[in-house]
Image (tube, rainbow, N blue to C red; front, side, top):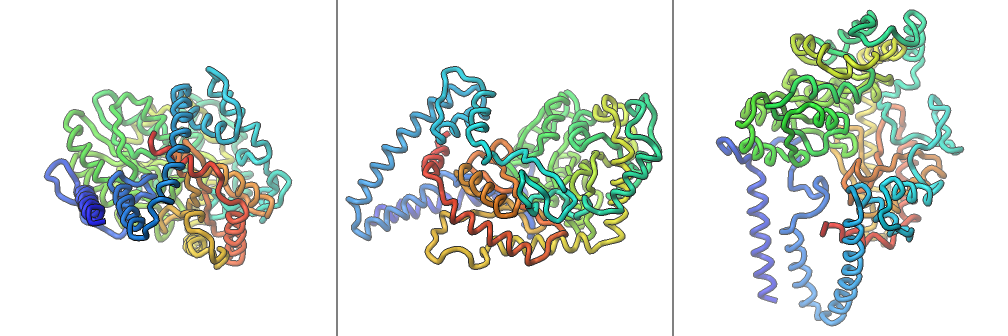
Length: 539
């Protein structure tokens, strides 16, 4: 027992040392960042997906000490041996699947087939692996549900009347009649389309008006519109960086940003999600090798519900002569006192050189924007692929967006209510409103991620995608539509529901949702495969 205690103490000390190293910012003069209330701890295991080796060792030695003190060695050893046999079997199968899989995605689909008891053919394609899982699940497949009556309080979702609790329309402007009327009026005044890309077919006046509006709203000199948010965010890197430059990007940056990174020709260096110590270390090692440098982050990470540590990003950007690109898609309209996003939240106006995003969330329309200094935006109109090689967004969408921006300022209660509802919903999910059975194991409950400043609340069922799918079906049948999220949109071992708050909810509705979700989690308990999937850490 004494040896185990000493070993445990040594491991704890080493773990503390490792933790202490992460607190500073390596590289440059190695000056640590000043901690603030919003800074994300890079050692938070809920963010990085799994505990560190040192933490696992500390847990192991603590458990060994307890077992020896209780005198339950033989029974524990037998259980341990059985678990290791099961583990070895799973590892053998998983290793075989990993060798057979052509991509990481296919490995994930093959694992799901193994769990579901589906046969795996030799040299099967990724398409077949995916379709076998999708078609086997049938009606429990929780993606691409057919919906109608989207402007009603309850939408029709696969024949069920459901309240959408994963809506991107955070300010409920999707159902606003003024927004709809403004869109229709703009379409009638202009047309349903255009004469071609803006470079050649002409620049509709309503698009110029919208560019002025979004630039003014975000405190920038100018902006450039694209037909979609994906095109806008993709175009940023393509326009501002090229061979000889470097972009440091958060590892969980959106697919639209990553598409631009692949196309731009610059050197791309990813840092661990929200780990600014790791970012500074990479900058210290690589920044001096390149010409221009950019730091790419998101204000709100849409599947994680957390925010970028903008003060930390600013310190590092200034230290290493970088400029910041920030995707404001999920912060616009809901983060900050008046909904102007992360800069307003941290009271750091103008710290980002470029802000990009979409109108498809709080603005209840379609289209994307790039905001920044006038000279840079003027340069982009000829160098942003989303503007040069694509038709522009139609007048209908521009009319809706213009009215939405007007309503955000005219009806500030929308921002306040969305934020208040989010805080209430998160707290209700934390407590479960007393619906958990008294003897229900904590390890079988869901886990929450995210930051209180956002309207996105990830509800995670670790290592149990099957349970997520079953709970999604249960919720739909009981009147709530929630979006299930799986790899590669989130970490492989952290499948989740992307629960959101909007200003359309009231507290009784939130209470009903939380009680139904807790009941669903109890009825649709952990899958038998959960313990096996926890062994994925070896990969």
